[in-house]
Length: 378
Ligand code: HEC
Ligand code: HEC
Image (cartoon, rainbow, N blue to C red; front, side, top):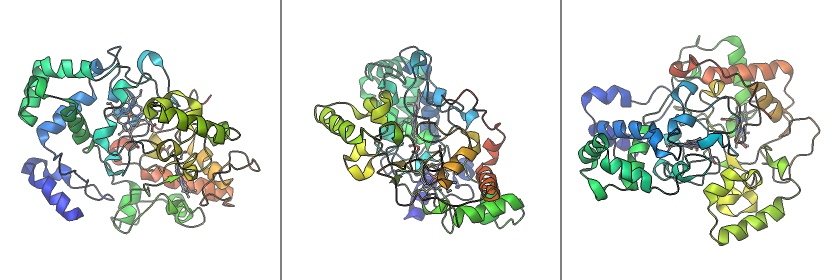
């Protein structure tokens, strides 16, 4: 199946772009939906849309404002993202790198795919702030360059151009933001035994052994996405609503039944945000659960977690070592995943684990300076 997808997608492209399409070391072929095949012109159009600040209420914010190539497609070191008029939301911007592989988009998976995801930021009041999608269509239908591109890619003009074509183009572009070939990949999949230094090697043993990180941040025989594409409550942020969770959940379900927009509710209201996957499934088992992040290029994207509450990789490792709480002995939350328990790692093992996480950066992003997070945490 995977192989077939690959040949379909490579067939559609000219020989010159083939090398760009072979997945980098450590990654499987990029899944391409049958109803949105890749083409060079479509990718270029998506790139332009992704960077266009005119699609925001202030004319200053584009997708790239919060997913900046220079910051490994995040807005590091911001704790939570800043949209129009410097309004901040509740969540930390995840990277778009390798998002093409995720089975669901957003921290809580409320979006099924990249196409669907791409329509939301435009009309979220704290992101790009448009009242609806009409201003975007007004621009792409009239702007000469866009008109030409939409004609060439979709054979559509004027009123025939809808958000469907806009979404497909952005998603196509995002499916080219793929990166692997980290030191870890060269060691594990490329058989370069010198690619990891001794601390990183010991850290790898902790990652797959006593640390049990690999049970969720998956490494397979021939590829590593570092995610199980599932949702877990690992004890981040939930303390903010610990006592109120059942009450908040009830209120949320009522508002949802009355038509409240989930995308807006979770990004604007800090308490609603902490409901996590529950906000999508209405299941108490999903309370405070978020999608397992990919760990690729993690050294470049501090601060960490859905709420940006952990400033450094050291803090992340400490959080896990304490069994899902920042301070040893703090009460764990009622909905904590069974996979999160105190790890009893010593200081050396924790430092080694951090060294290993730093070996997951791809060469094209490893040059980005690790983010300083001094102003990030509140
Ligand atoms: C104001 C900052 C901001 C802007 C502008 C923005 N994003 Fe995001 N993006 C975020 C945040 C924050 C999240 C996480 C939200 C959540 O999960 O609830 C996110 C999530 C995503 C994800 C999901 C990744 C994953 O791991 O699940 C993708 C893909 C994405 N954005 C692409 C885009 C595209 C395309 C645009 C433009 C149409 C855009 N973003 C505009 C901040 C922003
Ligand atoms: C039970 C599954 C599970 C286990 C085990 C696990 N993680 Fe995670 N990891 C997650 C989830 C889910 C998130 C996102 C949580 C959130 O934001 O609330 C995450 C987030 C992270 C992040 C932050 C990613 C980002 O982009 O902000 C890092 C770093 C991380 N994990 C490293 C580790 C390490 C190291 C271990 C082993 C000590 C580990 N994880 C074990 C599920 C797990």
